[in-house]
Length: 129
Image (cartoon, rainbow, N blue to C red; front, side):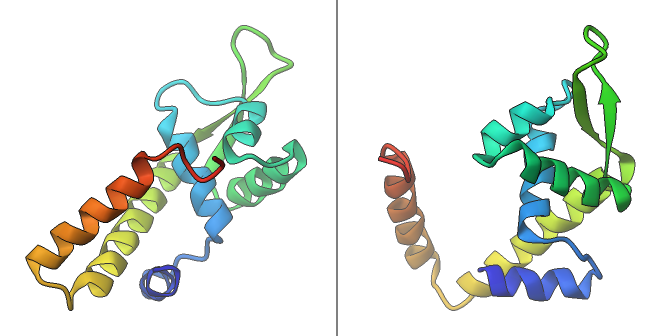
């Protein structure tokens, strides 16, 4: 899946690492309430310094921006820019296209079976049982 997605991203001329792509998805998940840097580190299960590095790179590309928290100016929040939203849409499109490529050889019945199997795995207690 990763290889197919990378191929589709290359066609779109997107130069984002998987970690940067994941950070964009996590920031978007928060919607209109931009997350704190600490929230991102906890959600991504990484040290805060790793988030700083990711945000630095994405900010340089114009995909995110740091904004002060209106209630506490010492707190930094991260929000998507218009470029970040467009990039996220392109990344989602690349992921969808990659999934379609991978699943193309399967019949509708086989896809349903695979979907059920994957759902059963996801419904378990998660990867960190």
